[in-house]
Amino acid sequence: MRELHTSYRNTKVIGYAGMTEDGTILMRVRKSGIDESTRAVEFYAPGDDKYAQMFAHLGGISPGQREPIRPFST
Image (cartoon, rainbow, N blue to C red; front, top):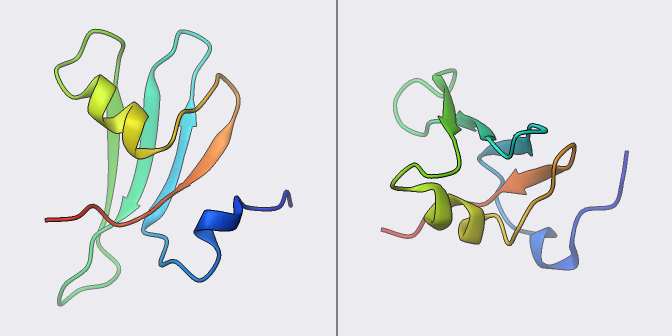
């Protein structure tokens, strides 16, 4: 298992993201709340309205790479 970025140590991780060869961001997220087993899978293709926001939230990502997802601020 590769070392996580220093900024992710001691930070809650809500899921993991990957990027496909065509640049689509795939996010597997655990939802918090009453039922901790709730999960969501979200896809953001280049050109989607939230693509740039998700890319920035991950701190950048490249095809084939896997990154932890930190909680989103509200």
